[in-house]
Image (tube, rainbow, N blue to C red; front, top):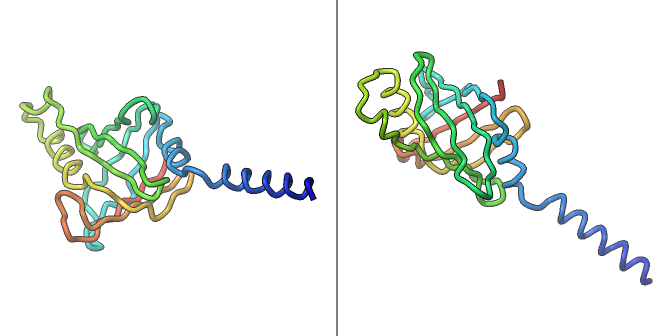
Length: 155
């Protein structure tokens, strides 16, 4: 009987350990430095004409804010902070205005900043694989009340 209790307790701990905190698992997928290609950036089913890519910087999710670059094809870029929450069920993007570029009149950078701002928000994680992710929201800053979908894949 005592052996059965020990085995049962061990199984519960093992299952709890395996199922715990998807926040860390999802964050580790993006934490590694590298480029993620945005394959869909749609509002109410209509895909954006210009799809960016994200350059994810190395990050310790427990010690610092995780930064990334929102880059467009013309060479423009904007910084944003990202994080997973609620055990990996939600994903947040928050555009960060860069003071050095705030006064620049670089059209490509302005477009990247505008797009990063418009798509900032808290997203539901719809799909989470090691090389593909999909996020969905109706509360993106620039598209309130509209269905916004972001799909990314690792380059």
